[in-house]
Image 1 (spheres, rainbow, N blue to C red):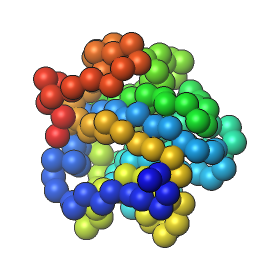
Image 2 (image 1 turned 90 degrees about the vertical axis):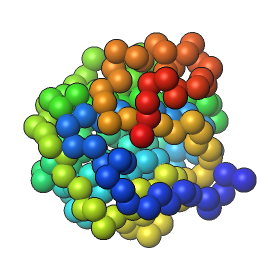
Image 3 (image 1 turned 30 degrees about the vertical axis):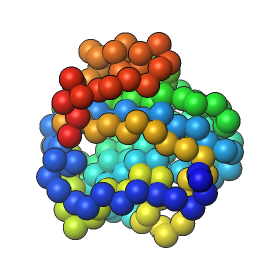
Image 4 (image 1 turned 180 degrees about the vertical axis):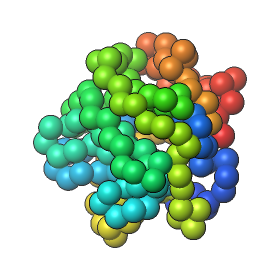
Length: 173
């Protein structure tokens, strides 16, 4: 129903890749009134020194892609609007983080040394900012795919001109 719902995925090594990562999802937020984590698997308090997260921040709608390799790393790029289905793809190729919104990137990258470090006692949550016990996303998330590879060369296939598509040929985890 888009209210107070989230998904908890039990911890396993396939959702915690260390040298390359891509996360794809479609989102439609009801409002941009809180910082929302729309995918995560992290620890380290507000520093997010372990794991990964994608957050949409407040009224700006900016997309925050966060990776922890023992240090906190954040790429801020693109923005989304409330009430509109939007595709987000965040990639990490072992060297750089990059974000695409609706198949386009603003070219921003953030250099991060691998490996990504995880607190393997933490589960993956979709639709909530779980470490702080609140901020459940209000809206919808669909077609979430996590890859243990850099999918930047497949942006056009994944975005598919704005139509969700079957991504099994790209081997999501």
